[in-house]
Amino acid sequence: MKRREFTKVAAAVAAATVAGKAGTSLIDGDAPRNVAASHPPAQPQRVAPAPTSPRSVERIVVSQRTLEGAGFPVRRPFPTRALRHFDPFVLIDEMGPVTWGPGKALGAPDHPHRGFETVSYILEGSVQHADSLGHRGILGPGGVQWMTAGSGIVHAEEPPPAFKRDGGRMHGFQLWVNLPAKLKLTKPRYQEMQADEFPEATTPDGLAKVRVIAGEALGVRSRIDVHTPIIYQHWLLQPGAKVTQSIPADHNACLYVFGGAGTSGPDDKSVTDGDLAIYGPGDAVTLHVPRTAKAPLQALLLAGQPHGDPIVQYGPFVMNNMAQIQQAYRDYQAGKMGEIAPT
Image (cartoon, rainbow, N blue to C red; front, top):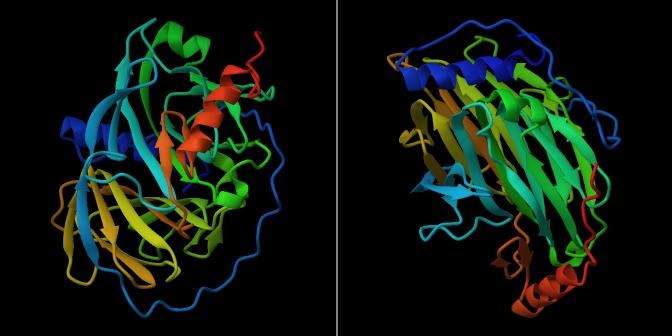
């Protein structure tokens, strides 16, 4: 599959599934490019040890629909009443999918963050980022913005002028990754990568494809730089596909399904659109889509090394205690996190 085509095929599958169709062919296209930070060189491929203990699905959390930012619709598996957080992850939001009319698109205007990292992944549409450190960029389909808020930053994620003027379909994800206590006040940084900068791989039978945003899968490895060891993978499994993905035994792991249905684990636990599957101990995750399925399965596989620190989330700040939260608000109100310069 050509570079950047994965995102368009994935988006088409999602749209076709909603409309009751099982597939659509697409023409490869270019995404806008504006890399605002340098990245470490690509890591050499390495052979992971063969997994010996598949993880079972211990719990299913059903995502909830809500509004975020200026009124943008999201589907959220956590934080909710059912699940506050999943160390080291603090939040997962599926943004849309939503089709905006001309002049109607909404985003998230200027707001602060401290103590964690935001990861925005765009499937359809585009997002314009700006922050108080002077970073600016536009993410197109398949693009990722990885922002380390650290000691504090003010940023905005809005539809670019052309998208806001013309409207269109928007679909993506935002993930919040907690920082360990010793890095809560680390220097903020910003990484932006477009679709063609992420490795993709396909199983030998051609039935399963993966884009590796962080970590490694099927012999390819992402070059995004992370503070916390994590795995972030976008899987697209056609009917009949079966994959086994190694996961370090010391990582917490979960799977968020946002299209189709399938099974996971040695007991073939059913997972479907909107489910967050939380895995128990082991060193691998298995995914399977029956040959009789009417649509492919799309899912994000997430895993990370837990910090084990107290987590106190209040609004846009994620710290270890309320005193730190209160200090974050005082620092923001005093202007210590800066402001976004007008263009």
